[in-house]
Image (cartoon, rainbow over all chains, first blue to last red; front, side, top):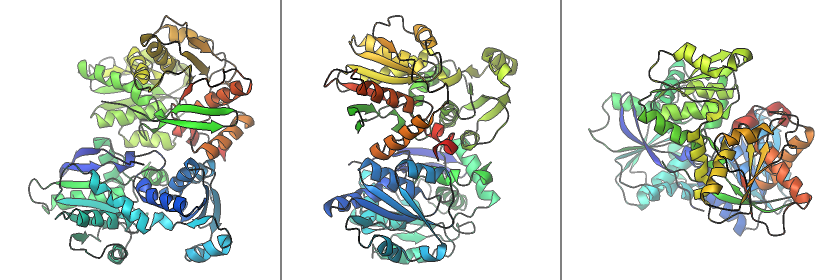
Length: 288
Length: 288
């Protein structure tokens, strides 16, 4: 399976000629970096003759809907452990339409994913464990392939990070291609220094990695009026939807750094748009 | 601008090896046949040096969000007259994020679109009138281009029809390529015979056109438990989301006709998946 996304150019406030890798346009349901993360996982599932994807996520997780869609397209069974109280929303409706079984678990039990998997599916020979967000070496391999698609060498590549899997993939791609490109990672959680260790699980050579831990806007799925306003202006002016959970924090960081003259004139900068339509729907009250 | 969508093969109940033209995968926001309809409209807008798209639709119209997204990507202003009481929903939120101005009008005034346009924008030299759903000769030209993309000749092509614009385009494509392909049109409104006249406005030669007016399930945006059940089974088994407003009625018709041995063995059949994620979101209560 070939995955390819186009590159668009953006100009907004202090951002001049920013190249954006539009992974958000790859597929309406398996959007953003989700196909890249699932591609080699599906190969492993096939090789190991598994037929049942078991995964984990919050009630507005893009990973859940991507896994549900990928499973049904590949004639696989799918089950998801959903964090928290039983709820209904657009995301979970789509998951169910794709045939996914949902099991709601409280936050305490949710923490131990391996235990949840083995207690429910320990006897199911066909079940395959997929960590939250698809985090795995297979996902890193898939994300590293982004570098193979680039038409030129960039001085800087930016991505938002929740678990660091996409960042690890990009870093691996940069290392494999022996580039001097700096990888700027914007953790979307508070205390984002932990992302360095997460990336380290997959990629030791971190010479090109720069972490910017001050753009979390209060933490995971937290926003401020300033960020919401940024989203509204950015989307209206560029025609590119960005989401409050991931990409808005990254684009805000790029704009902020440009304003503070962080980049050399004519530096070539690429941002990875990792998607997030459903993150937008999950915050419709805030965005209205 | 090149528009291209892949063809996937579907097997479901009585449907064997149905080819589906995945126009729903063209773009997450300008989905389905919307890009095809807007493509030549945007060329006309550019040629006439207009800068403001004015259009019309219901509160869950895929056309509105497509127009909003296309406008912002092309640095154009956009206004939509929305039919009915002021409401808020995911669709209209995305329209507003793309910078579109919404004007709610009651159903009576909504009927006279030309009057609404001229009373609001009669003095706006830069305003360009786009009919509901994008209905126009430009849209027909865009939809006719679907035929240019097909890798082989089909015996039957199916599409769902609200206004008949896509059907008119497909028929024009069939006529232009001098094919014997039968075009099967499934009106999604009650009393769908009017679609023949609508198609006639754009394409006189209707020798290959066959209208199936008995698959409306009660009318526009109406459903039955049987249709909802069909959607759930179809999506879970094929991994292809279909919507209650348009495509589910078409796929239901194909399955029903196949069951009644309408088609010769090994007949080559193509269905046009015209999209509709937002039609699904608009019926989330029914689908839950």
